[in-house]
Length: 253
Image (cartoon, rainbow, N blue to C red; front, side, top):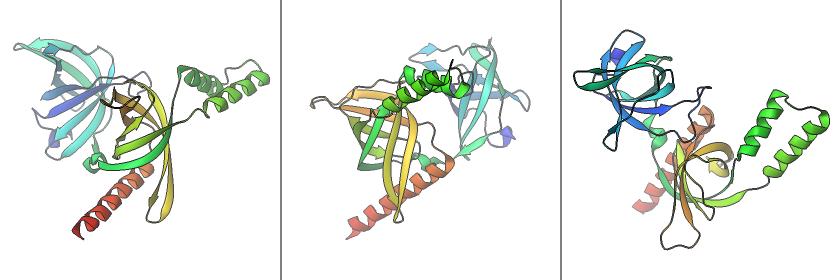
């Protein structure tokens, strides 16, 4: 039960979901805390405050909640039912839509490294074409072939980048291309785990991007992995700790 894991006052991070239950590309992260339990499916949380301003969550919208508890980091999804005032506090009543899922903190351990990658920006055109293809929304076989040809052309527009740190949840990388928060990029790179070559090809969201001072045409980007599978994440975490152990052994020499 939720009450056995999350305590009143525990910190909560909130991210908005789209109508498909996926994180919105440029979704902002809001901080709240648990106020009370209503029943097994409903809880009340404090309306988040950002830059000194109360943020009113949207009634009927879906959100992902991250609970920072004494027993670890957990997540679930919810729907906002209503917002009201109680004892000079703005309260949001939410209905939980899924069971609590524990997130392994070790997946966020960051390894500083230098690692070559290729990536490409996923354009609105590509998203639209992928949807048409998956939904069979084309008038003829010729149009279907044309869509596939355009997608193949877009799939050749890769850019070189260099990872500077990586975790099971995302990475920081540099490139000469200017990106912006909310952009969706496809990242691919190879790494070796226990002597075996691994390949990663995952869609990621850019959560921050800025020009590196003192360097011409070099930008630093922070990306959150979006389509990484549990197996891919576990392998990547194993690789990160394998590299860290090697580094520690080298430092002791």
